[in-house]
Structures are given as structure tokens and as C-alpha cells.
Amino acid sequence: MNQYISRRDFLKAAGLSAAALSLTACGSTAASSSASSAVSGSASAGSAAGGTDLIYWSMWNSTEPQAVVIQEAIDAYQKKTGNTVTVEWKGRDINTLIQAALDAGEKIDLFDEDYQRIGTQYAASCMDLESMAKAADYDSFAVAALPTAVRRWAGSLKAIAYQPYTSGIYYNKAIFTEAGIEKEPTTYVELLDACEKIKAAGYAPLAQDDAYVRYTYGFMAARYMGQEAVSAMVKDGTWSTSDGALKAAQNIADMVKKGYFSESCPAAYPDGENEIGFEETAMVVNASWVPGEITNNTSCDLDWGMFNFPTVEGGKDPATVANVGAQAFAIPAASENGQAAFDLIMMVTSGEFDQKMALETNGIPADTRNTEWPEMIASGRDAFNALTDVYDWNMGLNDNADMKETLQNNCLQLFEGKLDGQGFVDAMQSAY
Image 1 (cartoon, one colour):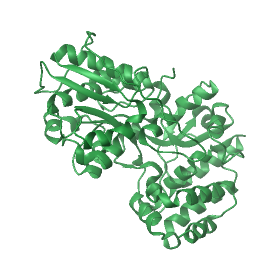
Image 2 (tube, rainbow, N blue to C red):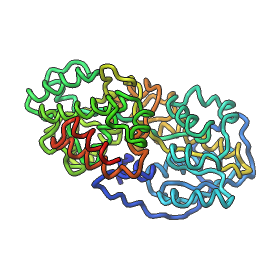
Image 3 (cartoon, rainbow, N blue to C red):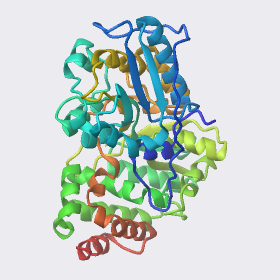
């Protein structure tokens, strides 16, 4: 069993798909659990204790490493409080089941799912957690960008995020050293300089898989325009009047022309990213699961570096905004055991078990007091902790489902060198 959550798991959990990759959801199982373990833990102040039976619907299958850690936290919670927790391990199928269950008022005291979907689709059916979070001093140790995003989507705190991922540019430190790159790029100009040095050292600077062409273009466009403007453009069809869309496309076209992307670009996923594991290519724009994924695919043993996607001249967004995602717990509004459920959520998402979740799954702690990151992704800690806001997946480009296929096809041609910046924008505009 791979001891990290891969891109597939995050995208399944978020209900997202990447082009050229068919994501098959894991099977659903149902099981219940009762107390046994003597693992220590601590619930939040004012916990409701003794004789309460909580019903928890889980997005995990019982054998996954995330589920194992959650079960240990449940065992500790039961021992500490005298409450019992019945778990139904729904697996990724929970995203096809939970809304109907919430609408029907089915007895569920807590569930976990993608944090954005809770904040948008399920929020009206979930309990407001603000007062309990305040009593637990949650905001003092939460990764600030996560509750900020939930509050923006839902209007208040309707979910407690855990096992977050972040995004940026991941790279092989050894190639940077060989190429004489002493400082991680913070601007687009500095990124181009690094690419030139890497190319001169005999390596391809950037890998690019077909599954992520909208992701990379979306990052560049959002740096110029901000996600809100990207979203409005893709909905309204204002590509021809958007300087940011053109500049982002031309940047990518120029980088392709200069040979800063691998010759295989855009490669069939995951062949492109695997080039990093084979030490042929230096960098890739991706999320924090990618070091573990590449290591699993290629059996490499790299010293990984990471930096946030650079700023662009005249752009709107700083490098402290990135695509960040997470799973999250929520409490149905109909639950009669809100405080007891919240205490269990706090036990899983903070302190001892949050730290264990990060280390067991090669993930990021949700509790900023937990400073130990898995070695493979530890280089991204400072960049992650510096984030002030978050992008959605593909930075707003997903906000018009009718344009998904057209956008994917045009992005593929952009990365293939078949379209320059103006040609890309014209092709997108003509689709409206």
C-alpha cells in the first residue's frame, strides 16, 4: 500500500477529472467500529461526554492509511469520553450519496469530503461551527488559507479542513546545484533564467503532462488576472479583450519555442513527470502529491525542492496565492450531537493525530503547531505557511463546463507549439 495520498485520490475526493486520464472511483464498503485502543488524545474544551453514539460517514476505505489514523483517533476519543463512534466507510462513493442523505435527514453526526464541495454544495445542510471553533481557539492553529476559503464559499465556517495539499513548482535540487542556480525563482524572469541554466547543463527544464495543461496555463493566467477575472472570462467569453489571457498564453508559447519544456511536452500522463524521477528533467508545475507519485512510479531517491509559482510583471496576484485543497469534516445541521462530533473532529485534525496523518500519508499537517513534515515534501513548508489565499483547481478555468473540452484541446496545441499566444486566444474566442 502506498503510504501517501496520490493525485488520483485527491482528484477522486474532489470529484475532479484531468484530461486523458479516466479516474475510477474506489469501491464502497460499510463497516462499524467500536472502542478498544488506549491511544491518548485530547478533546476540545467543553466536550460533550458519556453515552453518546456518533454516526460517522467516511470518504475513506477502512484499509487506507488515512482511515487507519482516523480509527486510532476514534479509539482514543472513545476511551477519553465514553462516547461511541459508528463508522460507515463509504469510500469515494460518498460524493454520490451524501447530498441525498443530508436532504433526507438521515442520522449522521459527521462526515468528510472535499472541502470545497462542502463549502459550496453541502454548506446549506451543514452546521455553523463558528462558536465551537472559537471556544477551541481553532483559528490560532489552523492553516489560515483553509478556513478563509471555507468562509468565502459558505459564508461561515461549515467545515474543518485536514490533510491539505499545496501546489507550485517541484524540482530536483541536484540539477539546480549542477546548473549553478543558487536561489529559487520568485519572478517569471528569474524562472526563465533558471530554465536557460538548466538547459545549458544538459537537462530539460520543465516537464508537462497532458493531464495538467490547463493547470499550468491557469496558474500563469491567474498570476496576471486573479482567479475571479479568469472565471469571468471563461464564463463570458471575453478572451479577446483580456491582456492577461494573451500574456499568459504567449509566455507559454515562448517557453515552448525556447525548449524550456521537455521534448515530450505534453506527454501522456504520467510519462512527463516521470522524467524527473529518471533525472532527465528538472521541474514540474504540480501539487504536493507529485514527489511521492514520481518516487512510486520510478523508484527514484531525489532531494526535492519546491517554490511557489512565480509572480509576473504587472500581475495581480502575489506568490502567496496557490491552488490548495484538502479534505474536511462537517456536521449535518440535523445532528443532535454537534459538540461531541466537533470534539472528535478536533482530535483528528489537530495535535497528535494530525501529525501522524501527515507522516503516515506523506502529507501536510493541518495544525500549524505540528512542524514535522515528511522529508519528501518538507522543502515546501515555508512556502505553504506563507500563503494568504487559495486558488481553486485550474484557477477558475473550470467554471464553464461547456468550454472544458475546447479549452483542453487548445491548451494541448499551445504546449505542442501549434498555437502562439494570439492564436490560442483567437481559438478560444471563436468557440463562443
